Image (cartoon, rainbow, N blue to C red):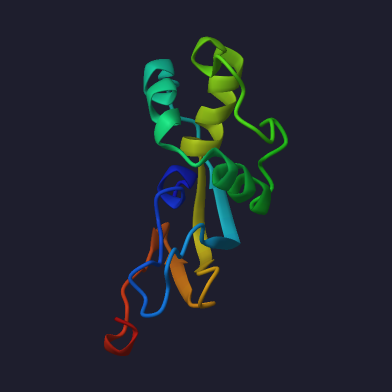
Length: 124
């Protein structure tokens, strides 16, 4: 699971959960793979991100060192920042671990890079 995907996941569908975001990451295996940098894509995805949640997710997997804690101004013109953001969003992948709902404590397993967000009937 890429951190880009994590930034958009919520457990809001679990009974009794109002927000369910951001899910905490407990990574057991993390893989880093190089991908081609696309500056236009990264600069266009930034407004759709919850940057604070992304930073915390990167911290939880040990990859926040290069990112500033807050989104910088004029990020779309800062190629160095966009490359670092590209690395965190697309090159870091959680292979195994768990996502935990901040409200209910419900754990969602990650196996082979795929988060299992399926709910049991009694949770809906």
